[in-house]
Amino acid sequence: MRRRLAREVAVVGVGETRFGELFDHGYHQLVCEAGLAALDDAGIGRDQVEAAWLGTATPGVSALAGDAGTDLSEPLGLRGIPATRVANYCTTGMEAVRAAALAIASGMYDTTLVVGAEKMRDVPARGSLLARHVLETHPLLAKGRTAPGQFALLGTRYLEAHGYDREVLAAVALKNHENGSRNPRAHFRRPITEEQWARAPMVASPLGLYDCCPTTDGAAAAVLMSRQGAERLGRPYALLTGIGLAAHGGYFTTQFDPDSDFLGFPATRAAAAQAYAQAGVDEPARELDVVECHDCFTITELVDYEDLGLCARGQGGRMAAEGRTRLGGDIPVNTSGGLKSCGHPIGATGVRMVADVVDQLLGRAGERQVEGARSGLCHTLGGPGIVSCVMVLEAAA
Image (cartoon, rainbow, N blue to C red):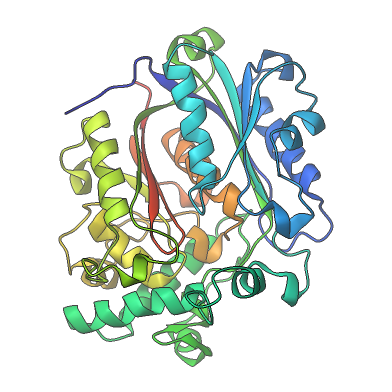
């Protein structure tokens, strides 16, 4: 059943910091830089914000910065209004956008601010997210378990089931590094060659170094308003026409699910179905012009193509190898460089995706611009693939 938002929701301003190893920037500095940039882009002041949401997934890694909504309201001087912090694994930033959008759609507020931020590099190796995962979580199910190791299982199964060689992963890595080289805010801004990809150290077979996204510092922000409010404001805007969120499985148990075929993610398929129904998208491969999807590893992007309905199951590898998702291809994917090259500060990623797609729809993506882009999709995938958020955005008519 198609369920439209009760009120149309517009994204009227976006802002991003540079992504990377930002040892010279504190958490609150990143929040302010992104938040103020979004407000400036929207042409409004802080006093016009009626409610705010902060997305930070792992405040324990950065001395509890980002532990509550006050880590957004206090540095930005947003006094006397609701400010809420949300966390939902790697969907955290998009979850914050979703909450703000639904608040506007309900009629409760007319103008909201969302900031996603994460500091992941200001700790020694033993204090990292990986180390905390090993030392502080389930003593049996988490022992020796890493993100590359988990997604490597998917990669091994996918290549075997569909008859691909490992080299098909290179198509994603090369494309996203090339796109990242055109993105002034990307963590990695250099293209790589197929030889560099092939000679890189193996992390968890079949995933090598260039198949894995980095850990990153950064922040991104968005100002959301009702469409009526955006029209009164008189600034360029994009419409958020479809929102889907789905959870499937548990953090420690999902890889023991007897129903899993290790060829895709049910959470993505369910979230996409919700968003497409709401936005009235029947043929995503034909109706979408640009996509930002969750490429924490190169294999993830390949199965994303399939789970998002951009191609048939088993055809993701061929789609990438044929260049159909490159700039100038049938449907450009991760023109930002994706998580792989732009970087992955967890709480910021989903908001950054929204910002990138909005820039595409407003025709201001610079060297990465998809000609004539009128509709776009954002997709995040959290934990070991157990929660996903999908959003459809459209250029205002």
